[in-house]
Length: 411
Image (cartoon, rainbow, N blue to C red):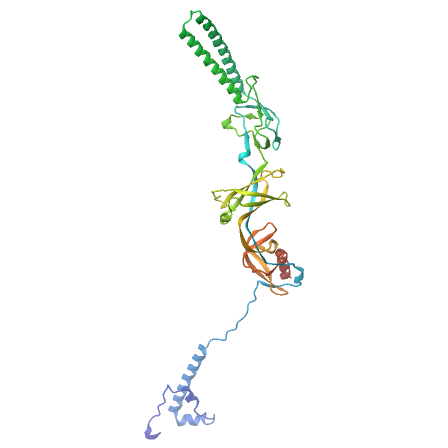
């Protein structure tokens, strides 16, 4: 080095330039280090710095990303899919329907209580619960101390009336001969009139209690006020009958030629029910018979527990098959029409409060698809409000299809 000056090497020299320095062979390395210790140290320092920068740059590079495809669990492959029948989603224009559960009840306007207006004890019962009775038919006989007291009062009033009548007749004869004053005659007539009124009131009291003033007896006969069926009985033989204000009806007779069906409609469906809507009723006892009625009343109150309103349907019961407290399935048919997608009701699988169908994708694959199912129609088809397109094919028996899938997964 000329003039003894030191060679200065910048630490910021480009790493590429450092790498371009000629590589000395291993044998010449000691000579280079001995010949220029300062130059060798500077070169070593710069090479160390470059190696750190290369390491930091390598650490900042993101690792390679591997994308893995997760299979769709709702898509299933079925072996021998021809074993399962398929149904095609169809569109049809029909009236809106609501399915509800109901119970048969007697028409309140055709229900008549049978009561006794006096207390006593039952002597004989001629009718039982469930019997058909005619108007005026004898139902039971009771012996009543109230009737005995009423008979005693009537006999007293009759005797008093007879006495006052005899006095009036005698005083009228005396008055005609001028030996009896007119004012005294008027007093006698007033006494007789009061006695006659007392006798009439006593007779009416006996009639109200159920007796006959012309045939006095302490026994009271209770007759059927109307023809019908006994739907309630609250009395037995030798039982005591209390007064009217402390005792329920002895019998309840109902005319079952027309009955009610009371069903619960939840508040979400109330807007779809209207007065005059037709209703199709199917009884559990007669599943193959469909009865027709009409909505005649929609309750203004909701049950706080079920959030449902009572809807009343009236229908004729000419055949007599409708009995109170029977369970019924009710299809309320609205007066308006809508276009709906329908599939067989058996094609809908209900799981965890959600509705599912199995839609065919190809020869062996099906997709389990969630749908929003509507009401079930009278022909065992179900309306699909959302989730299914017209023309798509679904497994017609979703329950059997799902069971087969579970067996396949277990194997």
